[in-house]
Image 1 (tube, protein in one colour):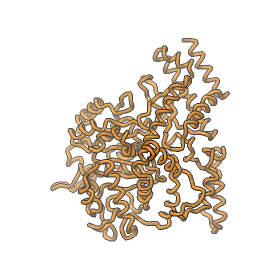
Image 2: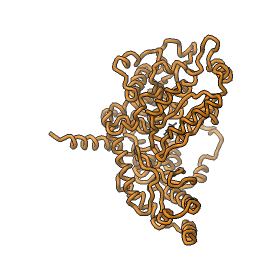
Image 3: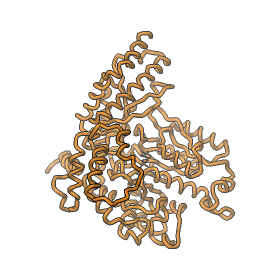
Image 4: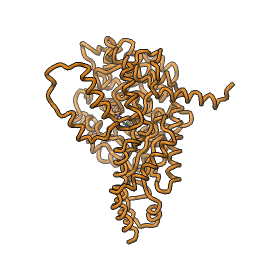
Length: 547
Ligand SMILES: *Cc1c(COP(=O)(O)O)cnc(C)c1O
């Protein structure tokens, strides 16, 4: 009998295999279009970008605004696709592409997407989707269970109940966040005896009815920019998206949050929602969700958790605790195209209360009749593809334990990379990984020594120059196309008062090896020697000598 550890190893190897395109077509899925697969595989090897061409140059291929007058042969068009699109796209699945939240996909997503396209179901109503509607409701129930873990009776009762929904599918985290706060807004401003509700009467009457001067949404400074769009669209206004300071670990500062809530209320505004983040986009940190749940209870407001990135951490027995309190939220955003490894264009919002989505219900006579099982009555989008199938496939084929392995390995890999950065004398770790995201910067040993003993103004001057250097290294690395990290700008406790430009690394691709991470650092050290950067380094040396 193999022991437990060997078992895990065997599963892991099997799991990794699904991220590469198989040599022979999979007999069960069968209908892989081999031509597309071959082309993609042939091109998508090795390099992040196939050819070094400037975007401005590529724009030349797309400069004609005339709609072609004459039909063309498909074969001719295929040539355009191969030469102008495929060859000029970004190899997001490359194990060296560790800069963004878009990474490798299990191979089965490709044939499934073709099947989905071939069936071309429209999830707006049962008449055009049949089995896809119950499938979508099942997937929503599965993810609802992952978060809220209601009992079996609950799911039996609600899974296919036409009057309610355990969540909604949409195109991504942005629309998921939008849907959550839309439902929250309409619930707060619900119809009653002397008011027909905000959906009917609009924002102005709603504020009169609530006897307040506006609504506010509270989120940390690390909140995703999609929330800005949400408050804009909901009429709340960007000024009323209150960005709360974070602690040294990029988590919302509860004391500051309480102060801001009091201030907003003193201004005569109503707090619509607290938004907690489970996996900030820039640094991968998780807000103290339990404490935020306490506060939202106290305030009587909606508690939304943006777990677009970090939600799947719940699959892990080892790391689930990091999201403690998420089960007390009213709604949660999870992106399918991030750590569920579905292709672009899948997001979900889950609600604790199956009745919550009725706040945004919309019916139309010819479609979406009352009491029908049509899903379109409580989604922002109208016509929608059957992408639930892709999430269902991931959950079925990879399974809870498979996702757990992916999550655990990603977090371990990030920790390992953080150790490598700390051990390297010419790099500085800026944010420790809590999940699988970290930030760091190039900061040569001699300069680190100086910074350690320099006064605040001097450090600011040094950082300003170093920021320019980091920007250039990141740019050169992207252009060279072997490996890719992204960059962002952060305020950091170590450097109060200035922001530092950092490399940002997201470790979600299971095929990213330690060797690749070693080569990322090595390449950055090489790029730092580039001729064009020496003037900046000279300035730094002068500054240091003057000190
Ligand atoms: C990616 C992300 C979003 C936005 O999701 P899209 O799918 O890009 O619309 C929102 N919040 C967080 C925390 C994210 O990481």
